[in-house]
Image 1: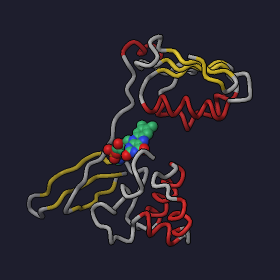
Image 2: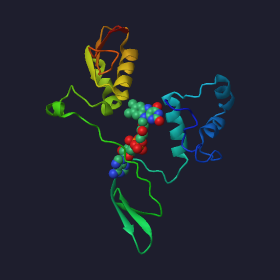
Image 3: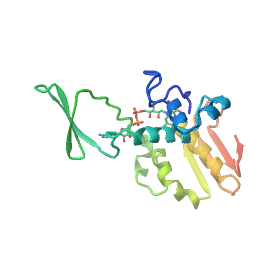
Image 4: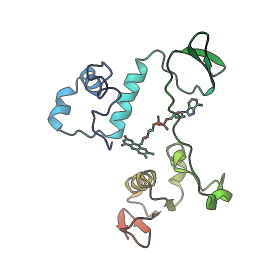
Length: 185
Ligand SMILES: Cc1cc2nc3c(=O)[nH]c(=O)nc-3n(C[C@H](O)[C@H](O)[C@H](O)COP(=O)(O)OP(=O)(O)OC[C@H]3O[C@@H](n4cnc5c(N)ncnc54)[C@H](O)[C@@H]3O)c2cc1C
């Protein structure tokens, strides 16, 4: 992760909360190994385990429940939230709907093309990349970087040609190519 473990679900707001990353470590009997390792930036997989650990213990936590409407009930002084065809009442509401995948207009005609994906689908469709021997990642953002790194790690050793087209100052030609795990500007 790019932020230290203190930026967990709770610590900076309430360091005494039982949902802290440190409490997660203690429940897994990993507090001392973590302390001795002195690595404050967690691997993403560990952060995912921590979030799963917290979510499993929150009985009102629901996933895959699209919210289709929110109304303010002035008489009751609460919000009425419609999700999955059911109505929930809430005194307080936090909205965190994230961003939509963005596809630049120049690529509009490629929407739905079986060989062109937005990186938001990468993890779901990664296994489909087992066959192709020539893969190009477009985009200078962190997602592009992480996809390219993942491909480098998983495809090094075979003869796959990987390209990353990116607008970074360090690479005026904007092309990084990799073959068999070695990087070539
Ligand atoms: C590759 C990558 C790496 C990153 N690494 C880091 C990092 O190391 N450290 C860091 O601090 N940040 C990192 N970030 C940024 C971080 O992921 C985002 O800032 C953060 O996830 C934004 O949180 P959010 O809750 O606003 O949106 P999201 O995490 O996108 O969550 C929004 C959720 O709302 C759901 N949703 C949308 N509409 C509805 C609806 N109508 N009903 C129900 N649910 C709905 C969506 O399905 C989604 O699950 C990274 C981002 C990327 C892309």
